[in-house]
Length: 187
Image 1 (tube, one colour):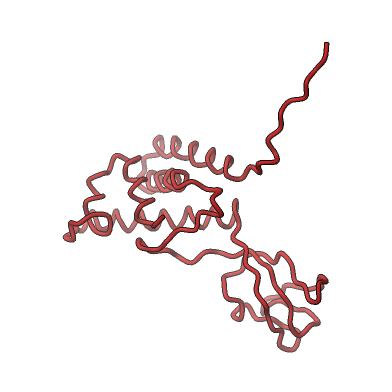
Image 2 (cartoon, helix red, strand yellow; image 1 turned 135 degrees about the horizontal axis):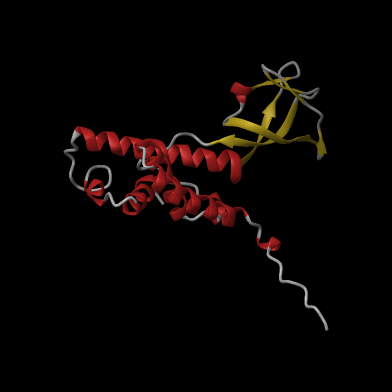
């Protein structure tokens, strides 16, 4: 699903369907200044919510082979914006490391690094990674509606969308194995 489709869903929730007729959502390419500003704010809201989900709730994980130079892996040599190191291993064994200001330090030449990262800012035409199917687009749209209401000063509406957003996130974060049936009690 594309960013613009999720924002269109949020526009429906916000009762702002008239914005859906303008570019990038609809065919009307002449966008008045006020509407253009609102559309850009909605994109900022999307990226804010998407980053919050990726950093705090459903982390994006990447593994890659890395080379250490004099025992240091500079952050610039890692392909994504790293937030947390999950594992550093070589030859099937964990490698001890330290995280310093200039990079990751370890006494090894090459290793496999597994880490969490922050997603890049997405534009209207970009495809959205839905966290392996765990997250539904409506949950993202709830988050966009919540952020939009907050920046617009509609605090009561923001509270409604906040409740729905965090409820949807809680459901997305539940592992299917965590659902338990109560134990039967015998009389």
